[in-house]
Length: 141
Image 1 (tube, rainbow, N blue to C red):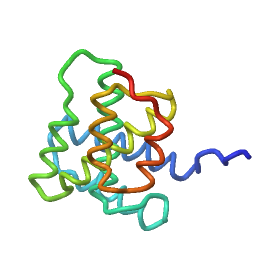
Image 2 (image 1 turned 90 degrees about the horizontal axis):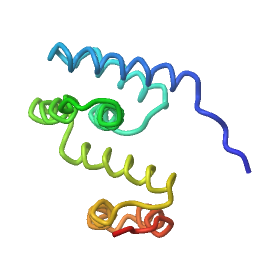
Image 3 (image 1 turned 60 degrees about the vertical axis):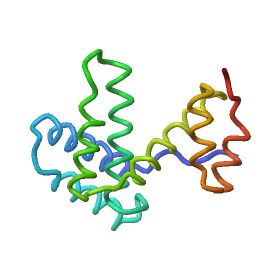
Image 4 (image 1 turned 180 degrees about the vertical axis):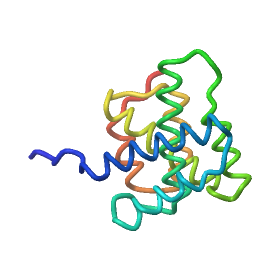
């Protein structure tokens, strides 16, 4: 069975959201433009969850890109905490975004470091989907 590729509109809006967040973080400005894009994605059924969670998922992805390519401190994690203080997203939104990214990485490579695996197992909250995904991932010490 072959899965369809990413939806072009989702990809376009996702790139716009990344670009908007990069500008907002760099200038420490109002996150309204990024929130507008997140709301558009939700309204069109291209993303699920509240807008803060969409922003959190994008910030986690930007953090991963930053950590792979830069040696400077990550500005996106700090900005995510700023969004929590503003009430734009919640700690749960950030945890869900991290969980999703970590699970996808683990599934793609087939394993996760023990400390990450253990954090995900503790966070699962009894969610059978997370437990099923963890069962497919090797825990490496």
